Image 1 (spheres, helix red, strand yellow):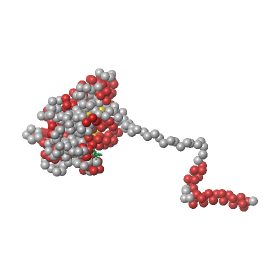
Image 2 (spheres, rainbow, N blue to C red):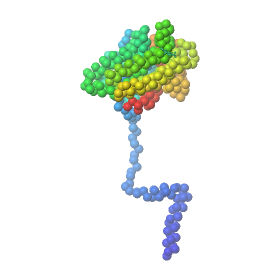
Image 3 (cartoon, rainbow, N blue to C red):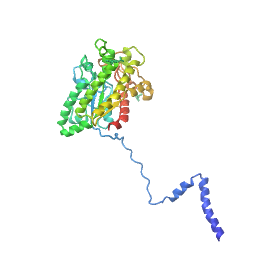
Image 4 (tube, rainbow, N blue to C red):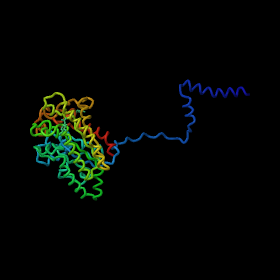
Amino acid sequence: MAKPTLLFFFANLIFPLFIITSLNVSPIFCYRAWRRPPFPYRRPLPPPPPTPPQPLPHKISTVLIFGDSTVDTGNNNHLSTVFKANFPPYGQDFPGHVATGRFSNGKLVPDFLASMLGIKDTVPPYLDPGLRPRDLLTGVSFASAGSGYDERTSTGFTNVIPVLKQVDLFRRYIERVEGLVEEAQALEIVNAALVLVAAGTNDMTFNFYDVPSTTNRRAEFNLSGYHHFLQNNLGIFVKELYTLGARRMLITGLPPIGCLPIQKATRNSQSCVKQQNKDALSYNKKLKKLLPILQSELPRSRLIFGDIYKPFLEMIRFPKKYGFAEVSRGCCGTGRSMERSMLCNRKTPKCHNASQYVFWDSIHPSQATYELASKRILLRLLPELT
Ligand SMILES: *[C@@H]1O[C@H](CO)[C@@H](O)[C@H](O)[C@H]1NC(C)=O
Ligand SMILES: *[C@@H]1O[C@H](CO)[C@@H](O)[C@H](O)[C@H]1NC(C)=O
């Protein structure tokens, strides 16, 4: 009896092993599958319903914007200045095709930031007389096209609101918010707001490069001296915002100024003006060093350097990668000469598709550029700001 039993035992053991190995399936896998209890029986889960795109996790529900035309959503409409963009073709790709005063064919970085944060689709200008309580609580722009950290940039001939004077508007804003909610809550709103500060380009172009040297800052400062002067003002500005309650601030550096079509045109250069790009890089390097120092002087503040130089230059260098076909001239106008503001208007020739242009006019980026830049800024810097 012993022999057949033993044989039977081996046959039972070896035969499955034989099948398993000949099927090229791991015996261990089979063992595990066999060991897994068949009960309780689990009904396979139905596929999850498609989830709508979720806003990034954050605690930001207000955006406050300061600076120049790159972030002015229409304040200059309410000033007596020639620096306006409230006529076509500005705004041709904005919802409703309205010229809101934004210096582009569509939305600007503040709008994209606010919508990516799930706050609202567009950020109104503070000087808009029709602001509703909700507009105030979710944030506005105090920026003014043509302005800079140097008051001379704004007061010489442009008559717009210098960055340091934008603090006065901010003060009035806070008073209005205090009229809507309790004072402590108003302070909380300002504390938690994302503050974006974008300026400096006009200071360099109006005061250092383009205006005749007898009246510009070149007569007073060398390059590093002027950078120092601007960033000293920037520091004063940041401290004032801090005193008023601002804590989270994203402060942008300079773009590759030498690649702006207007700078190339005034230098009669086909390629980017190297020296001006080099200058912008040295300004950025200084600012990147300054911000941590300021932050350490301002308890519980977050001062983040927003690098726009790199993404911008990448779009100019590798346009195809970003869906652009034209990088050296603006869509509105010939783009080669001085078109800006009044010089980009209804009668100016314009391109067929602004999305294929990095620049909308001879100075200002197109909506497509702003959208790409916003995505990049937010994805990289939001974790640092929240
Ligand atoms: C710029 O000017 C400052 C004084 O205003 C001087 O100390 C510095 O050496 C100058 N820099 C250059 C590169 O000439
Ligand atoms: C404009 O160009 C963009 C980017 O190349 C493209 O996606 C879009 O379809 C174009 N629009 C029109 C109206 O041709």
